[in-house]
Length: 191
Image (tube, rainbow, N blue to C red; front, side, top):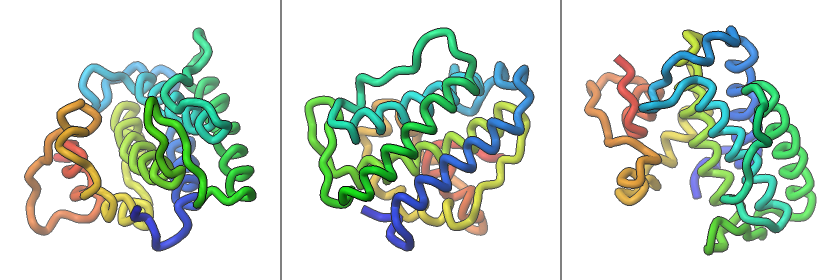
């Protein structure tokens, strides 16, 4: 597992905070705009990230990460708050009990809770950029978060790309910065 330049939980909190900031700054009407995720709007990106945070909470509580879903009929901001707050609270509780030794259920598999945290930091960070692009907001990401995610990008397998969770690697110029490199490895065309 990467993201070791600081505790994984700190990177997770930062990614959640940055995503929430981009959502808070967005005009609600702009959430209907298309995102870089094919076929998704900004609201779809928010729903996806919220669903993943709900799954994280469920997994930390002993349930299955894959069965969590937002209650129907919520606007994106409501769904976000209802997912964010328990995820952060459950993370804090799990840290007190020793999250580094925890295993959580993801479908039929049991994985290290840290493994899931690292994947969520990647997911939330990349989708922060997607959300910002969808709503015409600030798409610059914190350097330390980008560097942490970039260091973990080799964990993306061909199987993950084939499933559609990540796009194909986009060729970029050698002089590209860390954020552009990270996004290209996630299949996002920046230019």
